[in-house]
Length: 414
Ligand code: HEM
Image (cartoon, rainbow, N blue to C red):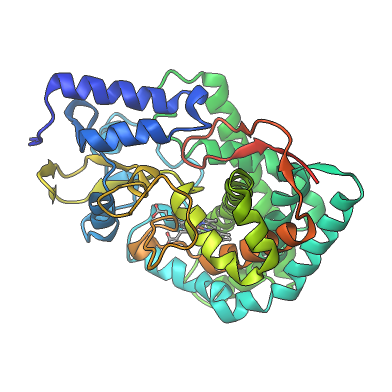
C-alpha cells in the first residue's frame, strides 16, 4: 500500500510538470520546471508504481540507502512483465551500473584499477597532446563548433584508447552509442514511442554486442595493454567473469565515456561564455579549472536524473515507498536546492565545500570521475588560455535526451 502525502490534484499538477520536462522544447532550460517540482515536494504515482524526488536531502539519502536497488528486475513492473512471459534481458546481463551487490561489487572491482587517480594521471600528457592538436586545427578557422571540433573528439579518443577499441571504428559505433544513451530516459517505453524507435535501439544494442564479441575474440588471440585485454585475461583465469559480462562492461564504459564528459566540457564552456569574467579568469590561471569543473557538475550536470527501485519498503522523509516501486531522483533539481546551496541559480566556481551529486553518491559513485575531471580540467584551461576573446556565435542546440542531457551544437567565434 502506498502511504504518501500526494493528493490527486497535486499529483496531476506534478505530472503535468514532468510531461513538460520530457518535452524537447524545454531542454535548453529545464531549471524553472525543476524548481517548481522541488517546491511541490516529493510526488507519488501509486498506479505507476513510481515516486519522484527532487530535494537534495531525499536524493542524497536514497543514493546511499541500503534498500535502494539498481537492478530493474526488482521492480513490481518488471516482475509483472516476467509473470506475463516477457523476456527482459534478451541481450544478456546489463552493465554493473544496473546491478546490485554482490555482482556489482565483483564487476566494479575488476575494472576499478583502470580508473584510480595514479593510472588516470599517467594519461595526462596524452590528453594534453590531443587537446593541443584539436585547438591547433580550430585556430586556423576563426570559428568552430564546440561539440564537433572539441568536446566530442577528446573523450571519445581517450575512452577508445583505454578500452582498446580502434579509434577508426568510432564513426561506426557513435550512432549506436547515441541511441543507447537515449534509452536511459524515463518512460521511453511507455510514452507512446513508436515501435520503429524501439526496433532501432534494439538493433543498435545487438550491433554493439556483436562488435564487442568480435573484438574480444581478437584480443584473446592478440592481447594488448588495454582494459578489454585485461578483462579477457581475468575471464580465462577462472570463473570470476563471463564473456557476456565483459560485453556489458565494455558497453557501459563506452557509453559513459562517450556521452557524459562531452557534456561536462560543453556545459562548462557555455556557462563561462555566459559569464565572461569566468572565461578570462580561467584563461589567466589554469589552477581554477577544478573549481569550474565542480561547479558545472552542480549547476548544469551532464546526468540530470537517476533511478532506483525500493528493494524493501522505504521511508524517505514522510513518503513511504512500497517494495518494488521505482524512484526517480531529479539530481539536477536537487543541485539547485536552496536548502543545500546558497544562491543555487548562480554559477559561482568560488563556492566553498561543494558537495554536489553530479557524479552520484554511494556504491554507484561514478567510477570514471577522476578521468572526467582530468579531461575536463585540461580541456577547459587550454581552450580559455588559447582563445581569450572567444564569444558565443549561435544559440545552443540540444539533443533530445532528458537523462544524459547535452548540447548537439554550439558555434563559437574566436
Ligand atoms: C562528466 C562526466 C561524467 C559524469 C557527470 C558521470 C556521472 C555519473 C553518475 C551520476 C553516475 C551514478 C549513476 C547512478 O548512481 O545511477 C555514474 C556512474 C558511473 N560512471 Fe560516470 N560520469 C562521467 C564520466 C564517466 C566516465 C568517463 C566513465 C568511464 C569511462 C564513467 C563510468 C561510470 C561507471 C562505470 C559508472 C557506474 C558505477 C557503478 O555502478 O558502480 N563515467 N557516472
